[in-house]
Image (cartoon, rainbow, N blue to C red; front, side, top):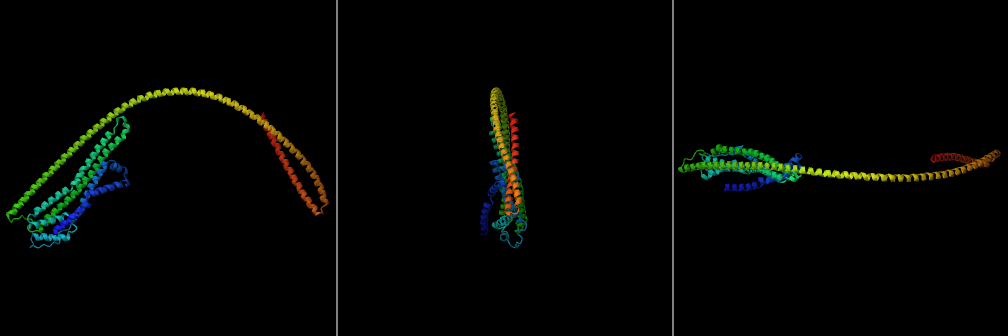
Length: 489
């Protein structure tokens, strides 16, 4: 019952590992993460956008590449555990009695593995030892164990080869996607060529050719990475299986009595061993023949694909060159026709423009003559108005001069009267001085005289200011008279 429980536990664990360790799941997740982080890359942003996001084939190629990369990483992740199970002796500490038969030895080995190999239960080495123990337990003896170990080694190699079927398919499909992108890009370029509008269609043609070459370059680069990665991982895994086979021959066979020697107990066992050996030989021959057949088929398919793609590319190149040549010839003819039409239109336009220029010159001469007449009329009008304005200005200036002369005469009369008043005031001042001399003892009279004297002094100052004002007015009148005479002259 113990082996069944272990098998059941392994199946559940395999299901869980199959779900969470699926390369399709991780490859899709890595592809999504790559495209989400692509806009935030600090370097080579334009090149990454060009080679990974320009066409849907680039998306498909990148997705397949990351799925293959996840497959290789899943296999590479198991290699350290497999190598770790080989480093210490897995059966170290196992105690077997010389009196134990093969069945008892197998049970003790199983019990020992249950104790020391719990974490490495899924490694190839532990499974190889358990398969050998199950074989001995089922047969009841260790007869034919060496052949069975050889069969397990070949079976492991076959499973190893089958385990790389997905990555080989992806490695084959990635260049095919690149060639498909080449065909699609060249088809787009040819479809967008329009002979009538060759210059306007050139960007679309170059865009199609860019898709063709970019998808091919991307697929070839990614397929090279997958090929080298597959070689390294597969070689490491094959080396691990070889070491496990050596361990089985050198260590497992030594645990069972008479396991390395052929059974001589009965003719039936001899016949069974011979039949098994013949079956193994025939199986090896069939497997080798099938592998050769598959290899031949794949090589022929690859050669046919390569020949077809080469012919298709040559055909497309020839068609593209023929189309471009025809397009250039048509374009040259159209340019010649357009040049002649342009020259004819230019000559007619030049004649029309010359006639319009002559008419414009005649019209401009008439307008200039009419403008000269109008300017002469306006100048005569302006000259008459200027003469009238000058006469009016002289008349007003003479009136102003007479008014100023009259005012100045009045001011002179007032000044004379003021002078006479000052004379009388001086006489009165003399009289008051006499009176002051006479009335020096009367203090009140003296004060009154002092105030009167101050008033007289103020009157004298006013008279002086009037004299200055009169002088200024005389100067202004003389200046205005001089200017009026100069303008009248």
